[in-house]
Length: 253
Image (cartoon, rainbow, N blue to C red; front, side, top):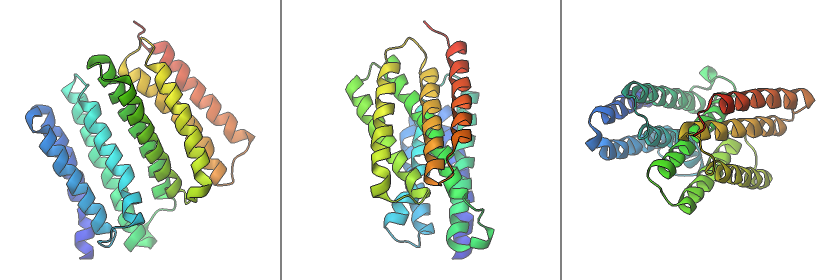
């Protein structure tokens, strides 16, 4: 049974790559495929959780599940098939890496890389937020989706992402919820402001991701008791430079 569990991340990673890639060429199958991949991901995480439904199962599922759906939604608004395939490859590879480290953490701790799940969760939520928020901007710009509905979706996504990351960092819920609330409100307001700007959906998503990276990075070191002036300065400089680069290179129409 241990061999099956070890092989399952490879199998699912391949299915995600080929499944999402197939939706590029056979779009009529995209909803059955994403449903199948979602169920497959739930089953594999359940398998790696000793077939138990509990906090460990739900918390382990959040990051790869959000990434899978974020890539799927983001691909809906990409024009280039090559770009869609690239994101499909990334989704399969990243989820495979996450599940493999989850397997090592649960069953082969000697092969588990220290803080691997924490680091993966950190980058997963930032990458997922870029993809998901870009998708929401795409729904707003191209399909004129209701603004209120998109704002609610953004709030729910951010709350869940923050919760998962704080869990990965082993931060108690009662200690993390004030930070989660404030960060979610900040992103909510920033998301609303970006909806008013004449920029593309990907540019807006990149700006959201930069703000998220900046704040989460500082909070991460805060909870690790390693936050100092040097780290704050580093994140402010990196975040500021990325924000300026995106804003300058964006096409304002």
